[in-house]
Length: 159
Image (cartoon, rainbow, N blue to C red; front, side, top):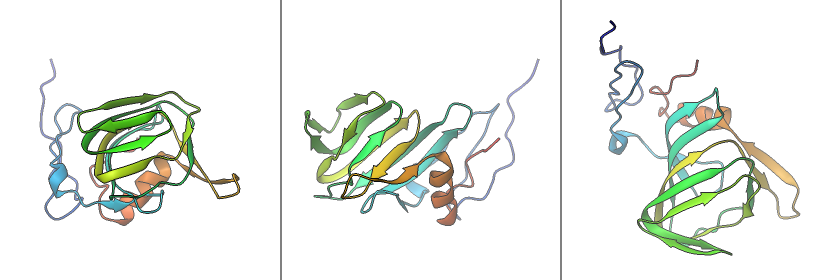
């Protein structure tokens, strides 16, 4: 019978100490710094990556009035509004609201007040330029690299 034990802690940021037990993790997200995201004007805190399934879990922050670049979710995404609200063609979602978007959704959300979302993305996002041409792919590798460059990925396991 195996017992849960504390795994060695990896350095992320001087004030972050993730605790791992039997493959799990607890993380004080308040101590994790915001990292500039691939969509201009937005920030994220990378919480978990599941490279076997292409899934990423993160907090996403969008300052008041930011209209993100048009983008396509290549796989489903789920989001819970922790703070603020945002809207796009289908309507507005406020604090406490939940959104599910299937893969293939193309949109350009606009925040109202500072927006913070808890996001589970089941695959990458394709960004587009003003002419509608693909401009970049936001996948697990890019999110990890951005977070690592900001000293905010030491808690992420990449197997």
